[in-house]
Length: 107
Image 1 (tube, rainbow, N blue to C red):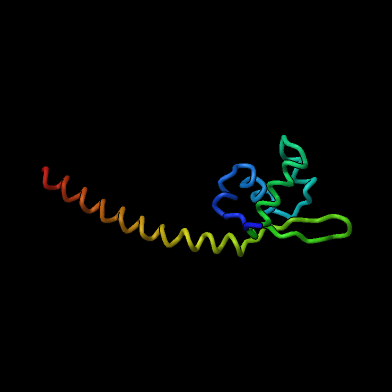
Image 2 (cartoon, rainbow, N blue to C red):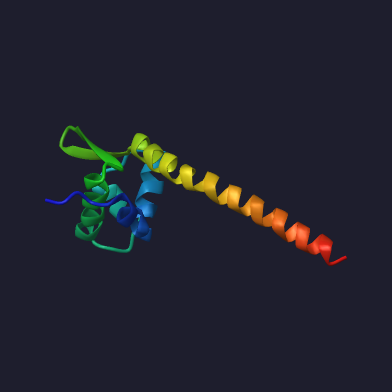
């Protein structure tokens, strides 16, 4: 089985909503499903995708499974994005300087 891609996982608004919900506290699939206008089965498919890319982790508690947000995995993603953020900021700063120069030359 192919591991899910984190970008595809978080591209879906329902999956982002699930992450937001369980970032606050661990929930069972049934508890998650109550927050959405979809079947428990549909929510389970979203949970499976999030679990396959390690964004959430299950924990057995009696007969229930609670899903927890995996902040460590999201941190890896954030570090990856931060590399690009630095690059964008540098480029935007350079563009600001160029535009300032052009504006000043026009005066």
